[in-house]
Image 1 (tube, rainbow, N blue to C red):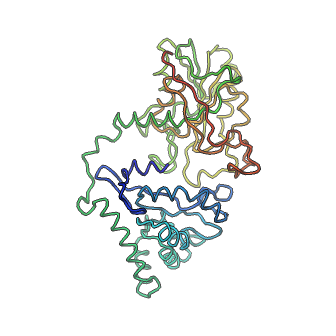
Image 2: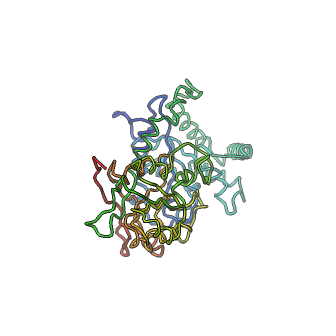
Image 3: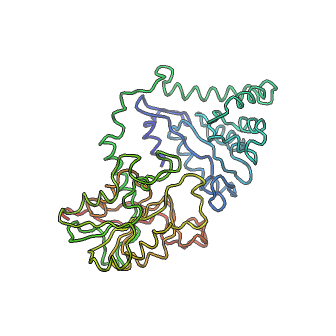
Length: 433
């Protein structure tokens, strides 16, 4: 994942010092590594919760991405809302200053999450003066404040005047922020370069996004019998069914943190290609494509479809709105799988931001694809379903059988996943289909 940093900032020169930020010109932007650290290990997976972990596991599981990010010249690191062994990360001087700045020699700046200082206390903002003191002394250099910034300035100024926060801490923050601004050439060119605006949403960029979609898809099952794979699907078939709440919904394909914080539903908020549209563009002109969002079993049986493509998954969410104790696909997704896959050969495409409960349906499904959140370029899904390209993606997370198994990591004594970390079937592209 640290290759993203090079894509955003440019390749780090061979003579660059470790920990020094690098941004390679006006066409590049500063990258941010977040959320430091171990927010992916919170108890029961709850957002902003507490991670209970020993130092060996912390350094072995959660810290490597930050080692790599610093080597790649990342400009900023954002602190997590979560706590580590009961201590709020925004107030964790040991890991922010002593480890990140002093031991790892990170020379960029540390930024808070939005209202991150407020949440040092429980309830939030219960003692804001203390929160400012704790956060700044922990090593946070830039504070993200969406609303009452004057209160922050007043508190910080008073704390410095009273020598509670030493001027050396302010100097460190200013030096780090200025270092990144100089690297970005913001003093020479303080305004945005509008010459690149026409590239936004360009066909070239959409083709790159489409490539990312097809390379990230993970084929989890292909045929009830290994010797009889369902994929790639034939483009030329008399009649096929496309079903599911997510087959014709760009908002669902994109998920949360898109046009709105919690995402949207529908096709009116952005330009793109739904999976249904992509299927229609890909199949032979003679193939009849029938779309029903949630057909009943009688409809499926009576229409003599050659095969079906079912696209279901999670509805959009972001942050704590996505907290779930069951990680199930909401209805009518399960009903659609049962109704369709019980009556005709089917491939199920799952749109989700994480592994979800699939074990109850796997035996009924002929082929199963984890599509994650493919975004606007649904054509990338059709590219591999119909064999213009092969499946190559591998699981970046273990796929559990039951939520009762969680947390579950490779090497755990109870490691018995539905699909293990790194799993992914492959297919070969078809020259003629």
